[in-house]
Amino acid sequence: MRIVVLVSGTGSNLQSVIDAVADGSLKNVEIAAVGADKHGTYGVERSAAAGIDTFVVNFKDYDDRAEWNHALTEKCLSYTPDYVVSSGFMRIVGEEFINAFDGTYINTHPALLPSFPGAHGVRDAMAYGVKVTGCTVHIADAGVDTGPILRQEAVVIEDDDTEESLHERIKVVERRLLIATLADLAGK
Ligand code: GRF
Image (cartoon, rainbow, N blue to C red; front, top):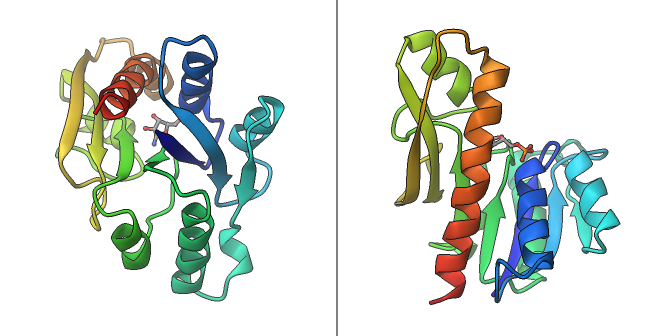
């Protein structure tokens, strides 16, 4: 199974997938490429260091979102992936992309969807005062953090949690869920 992974940040979740592929615990998965929406992400840097093909479709280089979306779609298609994985990819993709990867675009989100979608899932859960949050791996559709849920796991919010400490604990679970989801998909 070939995957393209999209990142906007540090790519620590991606690193866990790279490691799981390398140590053989995640079988039948090949990371065909890692792409970002901007230059200078550590996610791309660490992928290149691991010998993985990388690309940047820089949002700021395009006149409008549709053109950027078209370029991203074409670039991802060129790797003929079975799945595209958003692992901390912070841009909303458009209809052309969603149609091209209908049912094969996987997203991870640091909250228990459908609660707390959007860019600040961890912060929003804390601000609401929920005592339990978590993470979700799902098939992404045209909405923001919507689409069929594949895996989900709860994480308890401690009284002394900061957004950072909670997000770190969520990410530990997120990495495990993402790898388990990819193993499920690769086994099909
Ligand atoms: C993850 O929690 C992801 O769900 C969120 O951003 C984080 C990505 O972290 N959207 P990293 O880039 O993998 O370290």
